[in-house]
Length: 230
Image (cartoon, rainbow, N blue to C red; front, side, top):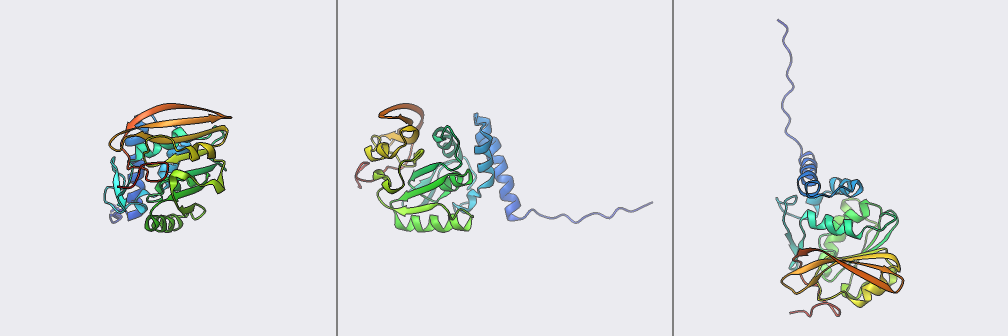
């Protein structure tokens, strides 16, 4: 009888486990809900979400706190917003403004797809943490700035896409003015503090059209053109 030498069992490393979690997240939370854009799905497979949120549920189907009273949305909502905001020519080289940096995860996804990202965060401590996380994950080209996101960031305008990760009572006029007139897209939750409608705005010349996507609940957009601070 010939004996076969068995290889010892090796437990998966932390990164291997996280890779499996991302694959499962994409399959169960994104593809199963109808998202098919392979560029988008590849970005979700690549970006290490667990590096942007300190929780055992980093890949779970729920929103999570990130500090300073802010949250990171569940993966599907992040993907839905990203898919809706996608420029017609794709993300590569697109100038994108993100309002509400939070942990930096959304900005990392945009950068992974090739966008040139400026992200505005109202809380200095969150901005500093997000910039550090982005750099550590390999996305040091993302520009994180501190300011009133409801006023946008005129220095980088016009933007092919603007993603607002906080809810306001209406679209801030400065953001609309900073949006490209050649099919620029803005995605933002609009409504009261307690509940909102995720809305897509497209600008062509001086005309802008809007379309409701989904009911959502986001933290409020605090600022001159958002909600007043409580």
